[in-house]
Image (cartoon, rainbow, N blue to C red; front, top):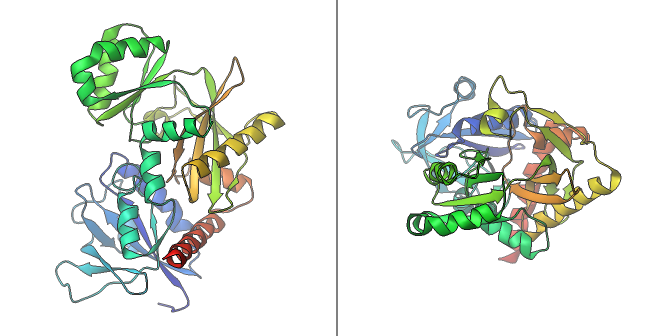
Length: 366
């Protein structure tokens, strides 16, 4: 291994329901690594949370799942000079490569929510993406919306439901939800990829109850949002102290809404339009709001910012920020930057460089 190259760890899989999507996203990252500058270490996390070191040939044979015996079982340890090392569980005296940078290509809980970011902070290792605070905030759609609203960024009206309040005060929640109007969208507060999202077009309590119960089966907190008859506009943001926004793109759902199946099924009819067909003023407003939101929740590195553009009024509503956006072949984040002239290799390289720059700032601040 050349001493001139930087060793980078790629984390993928994980314990969340987005395990398979994480693997697909990591493949784009691995393919895009500049092998003249970086040596990848591939670490798959199975659904139980066990870390596995994979040889590259074994990695490319993964079929949507990091199995319990996917590779050498390892545990992370703190390395020297701000690097993260691995030890074999069966032979703790045999250290494995020390990684100067880690890219946690992990979607959802136990990866995108600040937990892995906190681990990496403890090791004082550079890592791609936002810090602990931003990761936790953006993972919780309720808390994130409150901060965005406080920053003067328009959000969709919603009601928050906790499992315990639903059990004791469902009637009051129903009343608040129906006051929002129809249709409604019910979603878990801390999941991505539209997992557990239900569109409620009827006013019957039984339909709403079923949607809330389905979402509460996946999360202890649920959002009920007013449905917006709008276009789905997405914008990519890249940078640390001086973030920049890409041109906006548009999702054209192949179903009633952009569901998990519509995003990832092989027979999905969903399409993307890059750039989105917007007038100049709207395009610039999307970009401005994306950067404002990025800063409002203290993001760094990257985020994909999703909006609804209401058809009747032309109003923009910020839906959510994704701090580890998808990197699959159909994902908007890399496609938006590609449309700006930034290749996959250049994008991944910039993300590594931003990670190193952010760690240098942390060290300077003590």
